[in-house]
Image (cartoon, rainbow, N blue to C red; front, side):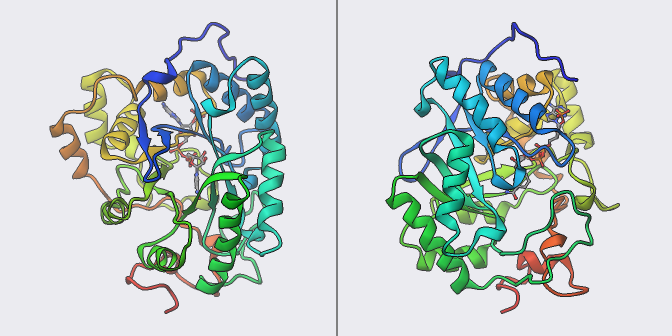
Length: 343
Ligand SMILES: NC(=O)c1ccc[n+]([C@@H]2O[C@H](COP(=O)([O-])OP(=O)(O)OC[C@H]3O[C@@H](n4cnc5c(N)ncnc54)[C@H](OP(=O)(O)O)[C@@H]3O)[C@@H](O)[C@H]2O)c1
């Protein structure tokens, strides 16, 4: 069992940097991820959220599919009872793939609001651009027999309901996740309310530089998931070719010189580059180390340049369980030929 210190060192939340969204809102430049990767219990994640709030985190990345929103909601309720104001937190949640139906979007958001015990969300994301879901804890071979490719008309039906959530005041901003440039082009063409954010995998071994430049030009904030390369990810998301940014010699030598953990270097790099990292941790020491990385001295231009040189285009979360055809390569999910697959 993890022991959370009762007298924690803390970071003043007003010292933590923030990003200003195109619409003007201030989003804390680091969030705490809350996906326990199928092996950290809901109670342990909730305890970590409680500790994180105590040491200065104000941004929490939640999702209905993580199964723990009710646990996290009890923590939020306690924080509010102790005097924290709702507007001091940034809370994100996500619409799971089995709730893309027009009749399901509002109900799903309301369920997350109930579970998280809040009256509104700061951000609600469409978790994946496919309606294909999988049982919790499944292995890499699991497939949904009704899986479909990306169908823009269907995605826009879901998006219209996302827009309705903003109109109704249930969420402040809406966004996308696991998109590609071709899919984002279609969404931007047809959206009445533009996505404020795209959440996507970003770390030093998977930098997605072109996509980031595209998003920045469109005024969409990139939120980087698995910012440490997701060392605790489920088995289904591991292949023998995967690399590890926190074990990279360049990251390690910068970390050694600065006297910090390699994770801190990944977080500094992310924030200086402009994306918002959302590292998960259930360890008090790591939660604090990750937050402190946002306020200690930045990386030099030379260090930033050295990290730019270690991109291995190594996507960890390949998404095989969302494929829609037998024997299909996972790259089909990511439109690597520059058009939506299938065209
Ligand atoms: N939109 C999407 O489809 C999507 C997909 C994946 C993830 N996400 C979101 O992104 C969040 C983060 O991604 P992730 O959990 O995959 O990967 P991650 O944040 O890159 O890695 C988390 C792992 O790193 C370890 N860790 C954290 N801080 C550390 C430190 N300072 N030193 C050493 N180890 C450290 C954690 O272990 P300890 O617990 O031992 O610290 C945990 O095993 C998720 O929780 C979720 O909210 C979204």
